[in-house]
Image (cartoon, rainbow, N blue to C red; front, top):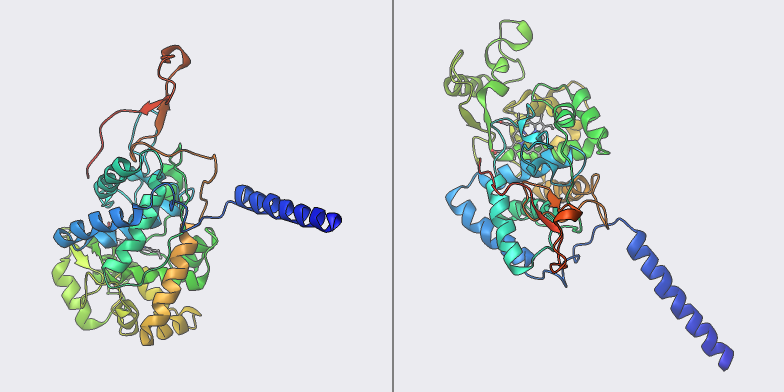
Length: 357
Ligand code: HEM
């Protein structure tokens, strides 16, 4: 009897020990990460975003892109949110981000609301990731449980932003390689490109396709002639390269499978979009056809790939920090400045100005 009890106690301790070990040494994220420390988190993010999206229906697209541009550069660590300072070479001034990043002020707005409900608990990286997930739901897309528990970086990397983010004239081989560098597959590439079913692009990013593709003096042959005329009107040669055009001419602010239907009829906006369908013999063609026929298949794969992208290079546990302001790393006070009566916190903001772009 006694020995049985001993075994039972030992087993019980082992479970606790191994359970505890798995929990503490495992860098896995968890959708319930804030269930004790900030149970209102999801409600706060949803509330702010619904309000913002009413006045600015493009904002959900902009936030999904912001999350993507964060994750491809040293992981989903909110490095893209860091403003230029004496110690930060900001990613916001990398070529793919210049005059192109929207949503920084919305993330700050959400951060302020979250801080007043649960101070010092929720990272900016999680706020950005959750905002991307909720943006999908708000625009007719699918929802998923967003794994949480990321921490914020202490650094940014502009060089890496220029290097890692794929360009609009990339070939399929180059696109695959940029995604493979992040541990993402061809299926992830096709699924995540579906985010180009909403939002806008500036003309200069694809205007080579309209007039003088690859120095042929002719338009891109993989561009539908009627669509070509529409785009030439919206983006006249030697005209304003900063004009913005909808990615999806039919449902410009809705996340749906139309992107893939557009590719089937040569109405992809960027070369990098059309490559997925018009590269002869490519293994991406079948995936495009499948998603074009089946919105559920697209939604399921989009959710899976967004979660996968959201796991890239995350900081967990004691790595990084929980930023107080999303645009600045926290600064530690020098020991000489420490007030011995104020023992609760030794951190303060760097700067104090939150940018709005
Ligand atoms: C596959 C390689 C990709 C390339 C080459 C690419 C390129 C671009 C370009 C050039 C723009 C227009 C930017 C501007 O006008 O300044 C854009 C916009 C956008 N991208 Fe991508 N992108 C890619 C993948 C992705 C992924 C993986 C996502 C998200 C999961 C995404 C989401 C978006 C969204 C939503 C917009 C519109 C943003 C807005 O209207 O504010 N893109 N992309």
